[in-house]
Length: 364
Ligand code: ADP
Ligand code: MG
Image 1 (cartoon, helix red, strand yellow):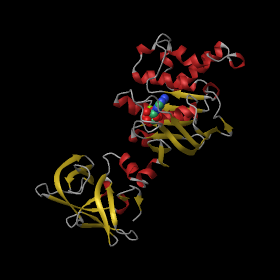
Image 2 (tube, rainbow, N blue to C red; image 1 turned 60 degrees about the horizontal axis):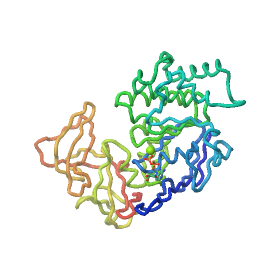
Image 3 (cartoon, rainbow, N blue to C red; image 1 turned 90 degrees about the horizontal axis):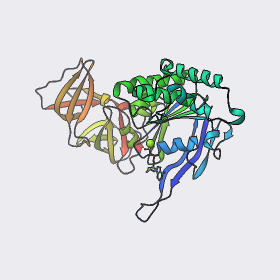
Image 4 (spheres, rainbow, N blue to C red; image 1 turned 180 degrees about the vertical axis):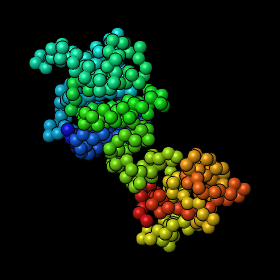
């Protein structure tokens, strides 16, 4: 089912004399989520991700704008009537209930004509459990499960009513690194199998990039960019998005455009045809450096870290915003470790230029 957000806005009023005034948690968010896709909602803590999910599921009422599931306007519809499955960071399982009872709980809550016979409830619970591969554990209680297993129970519980959409709010944050990887692949598999339109919230860019069909990058309640993960990585609209995506992070330099050339320090590093003279940030992805004895950009060599297939050259430059510059180079290249300097050419498609004031992208 497609999900449409139309000028969705949520303002929390400031409370009390010490409050710093109203908080616009979500500002004029418009987006049509295509049917059956997994959308990663990504941004730093406090940028409005959870509020967006709460608006979608009906836990919060919007200050402005509308929400549609398919053609249905659900803006005024109470949460329990929306047909949304919700998964939270802290699983929120009932400790005194078994896995089976926890998964059945949303069905037990149905009243009147919606209520299913007990056998049917059990069948659906087993079906959801099988989907997340915990059908062996149905008689255990949450305390007898690992964190990863508990989160699977929470996912099964969200799926048991065959929701129209699935919303997940940082579902992997309480898991250790290995389980996090495994569970995120699992979520991707379940989403592909069920084809339920899913919104997955995370502050972890790698997590969002790895499982999403599309990502939405937010900052302070405002959507910055929406696109396929690779497209956003390759073509960020502003400095915030460029810095938020990628590990190691992008390398940011104070730069200047003079006479249609991009300068870092006093070296012209790239052509900048069509761009007027101004102060800029020049941001270079780690994979955007080419080692070259005659390279355009001269940095002071720090150290070289061998990472198998690639090497990471750690260097410094006085115009660099970051303390160190990290460049990733194929391991067939040799770095003269005795040299104080290292020189690079830059790959034009890996260098992004941003206005120093607005931090918006300048196309060169
Ligand atoms: P995220 O999930 O991205 O960390 P949230 O959506 O939880 O961000 O919060 C967005 C902003 O809205 C934050 O500034 C937060 O303090 C504020 N906020 C969230 N919920 C409330 C609330 N119930 N009352 C007042 N302010 C809130
Ligand atoms: Mg949150």
